[in-house]
Image (cartoon, rainbow, N blue to C red):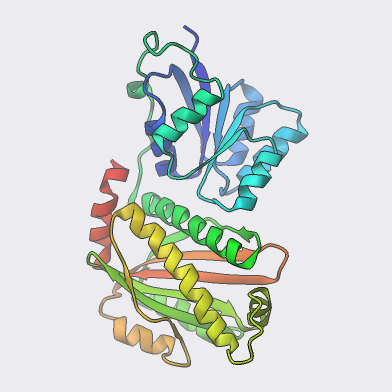
Length: 333
């Protein structure tokens, strides 16, 4: 019986592993993998694949770039996008570029099966098909890769909420995940405080023994543009109150996305504007002991069509890392 040929393209080892495990066990399929869009295009040009499962946010060449190139080259490649960027506009754009379907991360086995069946990929009688799971080569997943993918899904959910609130398209980056010494963190945050008129909103969080601080950093020159986008015309409120309002939405949505995947529940403190209520130096002085080594997650959002950029930093305490590792263990195995 001829097997279907499948290419999975995603820069995250964990995302590829999740998709491999989500494939129907009774689907006779051979699977190849690519870690960015350029790799995928080279494989697609060299050989035929019945189906491409494609991520959007990747280095070198993203999913939009792959779809655009396939269209420009006249390749009638069947594509299902599987992405953490769940903005309505993202779904519309990939369908306009020729994607047959859009599935949100993490890949749901039943929804994937239904989609494959609907598109005619599972029309082989299940009784004749051989289980394929043991033959698939699963990538090894590190803590950093696993946590970066969790953050990727969460930041996509946060961006979708922000996009609906503001009526814009939010451009998503690949999140940076690093373990920083307290001295490195101090230098980075001190630079942010000094640098070129930045305003930072800080909000603490704790849950299941995991705790830290979220920082949302804005360029002062962009605050007025953001206020205009939010239609913040009430004279009774300041631009700083607008930032606090937006920070609560974005930080809350991102933390909720992480919590849902890790099966924890975070309680959040009140957001504060650093400099008004506390300085970055004071933040580090208070948390210095807990932050001997900090798990730092950086997400740099930008809004398409506007000169608006802001950075979200999630700073997890050193004591949180073993707990996060335990929560991620089942995803990394």
